[in-house]
Length: 282
Ligand code: C2E
Ligand code: MG
Ligand code: MG
Ligand code: MG
Image (cartoon, rainbow, N blue to C red):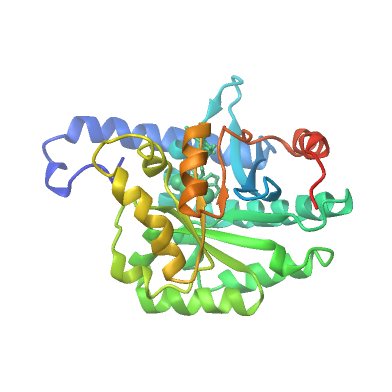
């Protein structure tokens, strides 16, 4: 919300912003309580190879079931957690839980499965981020670091390009991969992309939606695949919902896809039975 509103509007919309900050406070209280009472959990969405159909990884996504049983979407509570700093502890919990669950998936026979974890810019720029990462890896010795991938958005660039690039290299020196999430939205700048040593580029759903249309942006969407490859990254398409989108992406040489076309995010037990139902691949 803060992102969408231009700065000049702040005074003009004082009453609305007041309500917003009240709402934020309410959300934050609720989120603290939910965190303390184990009402947060992770769901996992498969990432599949566009060439073989094989499930190569899953992305961990945070869920909050409020006391009245309704789900609060992450797009509402993550920004609140970021503003308050709660995202740091929350993010640590997500990382550790996802790694632990990955260990269980590996033990169940899905030994090559990769786990992608979203890392907020606030979290990534904490001075002890690498210590937290090291500790999480140390506490999950069954999981090889190369099976972990951190997803960061372009907003980390606001931390400072040099610093982000250096941090990414530190992460990669531990064999942990880094993906750029939601590419094409927000504060996109093509020049910075060349400065970040990412392993994977995730094309935002907004672009995938344009792929099989003639709407403005459709041609740009297609160019993101070769762009990522040119920069030495693997490319994954987010929010793939239709066969037609999948076909275009395959023609473009996109490596992987994630979206309702394949599977929705699922709790671990559901994911396990879903994985067990997948046809065996060479
Ligand atoms: P994201 O990381 O880009 O995650 C992808 C979002 O797209 C997820 O929304 C997923 O449920 C949704 N999605 C996947 N496939 C489809 C599709 O085919 N169609 C449509 N319409 N949507 C699809 P979700 O789970 O609501 O998460 C929203 C955002 O919240 C995430 O976007 C991420 O930025 C943030 N988030 C979620 N979990 C975490 C977390 O643990 N830490 C941090 N820092 N952020 C998180
Ligand atoms: Mg993500
Ligand atoms: Mg995304
Ligand atoms: Mg996102």
